[in-house]
Amino acid sequence: TIDERGYARRVSDIDEMSNPQNFSVINDTLYFTASDKNYGNELWKVRDDNRAVRLNPINKETREAPSDFINVNGTLYFTAEDKNSGIKLWRIDSNGNPQGIASPPNIEDFTVFNDTLYFTYQDGSEDRKLLKISNDDSPTAKPVGNSSRLWNPENLTIFNDTLYLTVTDSRGQKELVILDDEGNVEPVSFFDS
Image (cartoon, rainbow, N blue to C red; front, side):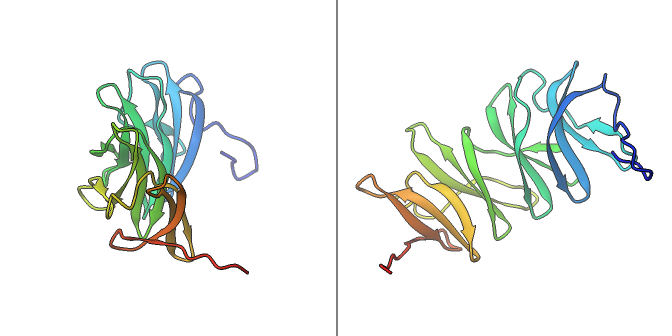
């Protein structure tokens, strides 16, 4: 940190942790990943007294650091690997502790739209599916809309308060669609200029 005189000051003893990265500020708390000799790559936060503290261990026996930090209406969501179920979705609960969320493996393409976290995952058939999680006390990954129209969703992007994405149509071609609040998709109309 930088003190009031403009001098750099160490946040935490370098022997306790190394390689801090993946910084994210949520509700005036700085979260990041770092490694220590006892737990490997884990999630840390900086307290009000500028001391870095490791949160409850998530993946002590794996090498992957928590990643994909995303703010959902003031709650930190992220992915992390645990030794039993691979990479899955986590969040920081109301007590400031990591909480695993029932979610499939191979999740990516995180986008927050209308206070809801949308993401894709790859199922056993190698097709991608679209899921969402509302930010409540017991978050659960739920499928979105009509799965037959949401084949291999990708490129989730918000523009003009609308969620756009691409899906693969019945001919195997990519199609640009809009997702409405009920999970229905509508093709985007194209006009020659």
